[in-house]
Every structure is written in structure tokens, then in C-alpha cells.
Image 1 (cartoon, one colour):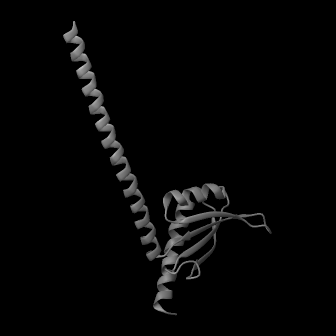
Image 2 (image 1 turned 30 degrees about the vertical axis):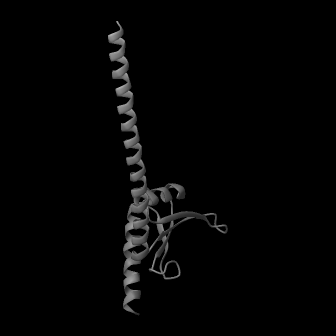
Image 3 (image 1 turned 90 degrees about the vertical axis):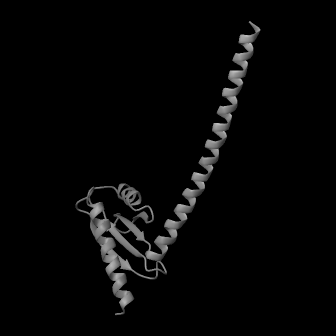
Length: 144
């Protein structure tokens, strides 16, 4: 087994342990069905974790995972044979996580720039309104 495969398995094990620990906060009987460290899912060695919930809904678990790790993908899959729900969590490899995080930062920077422009326009509008109020009030006093 190569060093990169060992690293992939180590990463997958850590991911599984961390995700399952969080899931067990709301479903202590949840079970890992499989952990797959594989380049099949990501060129950077992503990990797919499949968990079978016991006491919590799959939707609730997916939401928990998404809220805790926003760069992951969590989906609920209903097994047509057994009728059981399986929560599938995809955690990208390090390179893909970094690219996803950079993309989120770029999106946030765009939002911040837009909000900054809105604040500037609002401040300018406020100055104009105050100036008009002062001028109008001053004109009204002088006419009396």
C-alpha cells in the first residue's frame, strides 16, 4: 500500500470519527455503514461516509452535518429494498476543500463590497436629506 493510500485511509478514518461523533449528539445509535476513501469521488482524495440513522430523521442529520461542515455534501438516500434511510456525507479532500473555501471567501468579499457601496449611498442620501431639512427649516424661520 502506498503512502498516499495510507494517508487517504487515515484521513477517511478521521473524517468518519468526527462526523459520526457529531451525528451521535442527536442519534446515539447511528451506525456507520461504510467509509470510502477514494479518488473515484474526488481527484484530491475525498471521503464518502454512509450512516444509518436509528433515532433521528435522515433530514435532521443532513442538516446538522451541513451546518457543522458547510464545505461537505450531505444527502439522504432511501434504500428501495429495505426502506431504510441512509445519510451519505461527502467530505472533499484537502485540495478541493481549499478551493471551496477560497470560493466562499470570494463570494463573501463580493457581498461585503456590495454592502459597502449600499452604506456609502445611504450615507450620502442621509446627508442630502439632513441638508434639505436644515435649509427648509432655516428658510421657514426667516420668512416669519
